[in-house]
Amino acid sequence: MADTFEILVVGSGIAGLSFALKSAELGHRVAIVTKKHQAESNTNYAQGGIAVVTSAADDFDLHVRDTLIAGDGLCNETVVRRIVEEGPKRVKELIELGLKFTHNEEGSYSLGKEGGHSQRRILHVADMTGKAIETALLSAVNGHSKIKTFEHSFVIDLITLKKLEKEGTHDRVVGAYVLDVISGKVRTLSARAVMLASGGAGHIYPFTTNPSIATGDGIAMACRAGVPVLNMEFMQFHPTTLFANSPKRFLISEAVRGEGAILRNLDGELFMDAYDDRAELAPRDIVARAIDAEMKKSGAPHLWLDIAHKESSYLKKRFPSIFQTCLDQGIDISKDWVPVVPAAHYLCGGVVTNLEAETPLPGLYACGEVACTGLHGANRLASNSLLEALVMAKNGAESVDRYIGNSQSYDSGLPEWVDGEMSDPDERVVISHNWEELRKAMWDYVGIVRSTKRLKRAMTRIENLSLEINEYYWNFKVEPRLLELRNLLLVSELVVRCALMRKESRGLHCTLDYPDKNELLSDSVLEPEELPELSR
Ligand code: SIN
Image (cartoon, rainbow, N blue to C red; front, side):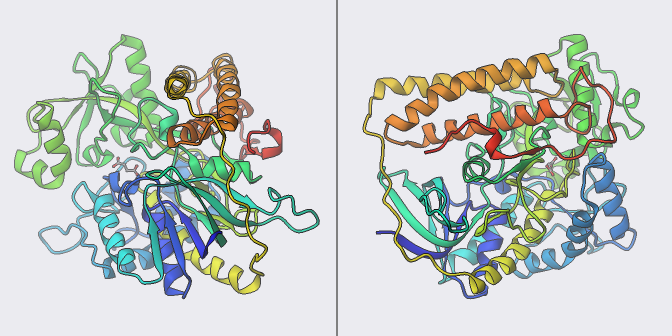
């Protein structure tokens, strides 16, 4: 027997929580499903802040222009303008929920600067903006009688009329199968509409700033439900993450460069001027490529970030989390240079949506990093993503409200989940082995600088691993690591296929075989029919 909700939200970051609140305010019963603890989201780790026009020196046209320049010709200008212009209203609502952005001594907002921004415009809460946003939203969501949160609950797949083989009806989403990670039972949730807000896919790579939840689940399940994806080749590598002996990459916010930090090679020399006039504050794709080139040239395992010319008291106040984390590693950033390397950070492509967060599949919506609205183009402007999530959550809630008002509920009952019969703990080694093999191949062959030969190598490995894991999926009881690996494989395949389609270098996609930009090319669109059948 299915549990019934009007709206199912997958994910509990800024996009999912804001959307859930708006939908509940419109009177809907909402279930939020999140695969770990509710606060474990990409949002929670966002340091920089929200790019939004608030100062007299700034205006919408400048923010739009900076976004378009960073996006390297692939942003949708209508989308950019609407998101930029709606930003201040959405941010005001966050403030009304109790969020306190950092102010300067004169009592106005302390506005941060990051790469690609011509103005200071980043609202922030010291260097823990995401955590402050998450806390404010969670306290509103947890007190709301119309919202129920299912923690430790993993959405296996969407249920659509097509999958139920309801011929002759228009396809639409009617629910989802959800694995309760603690009990191992699979619950059937029926819903009139599903909002995917499950974040990105940094874990297709071994080195990422993303928390462990970022395994591309939303993109993979949308694709299995037949929804096209766009621009998956544009994975943004953050230029400066703390180089450590573990694969975990702690972010050293771009705001540190905004406050004057400089990059040095292992000999202590400055190098960014040779790559771009904007030097350390060039858009992220350019800085990450410059670091990659310098590291390859010298064989250095990392480069240095130097902010040691700033007072310790200032750094502790402006960057308390970065200061303390570095200190825990024996690095005093007011005296020492910080060893940094690039790491996978943000996926600019994703599930195709319009400005109302609607995907082409009725009843299915997407918002935040999982979605591709056209805002980011070939390279996201720093701190534009929290802004996008807020604006699109509101647009999505209004659109879902209209959809529910105009569509019929599906009352025919949903079939229960049928699990595979095998369960062999010895076989689990296949999962961890394939997990590592996939991510190594992605790092080695689908990194910051690519070539057709390397992309094809990656594809061969992905195809082999997918065969093995799909067989496993069909026969064994489902468990989170298996489901995540299945999703990682599909998302990796989408990234590589889009990368092979793009016969040029632009934004975050740089290939040795097509070093120039081709102005005639636009979005890379992948229709799921072009992929081998992966779902059951
Ligand atoms: C950062 O603080 O450098 C990250 C901000 C972002 O990814 O937009």
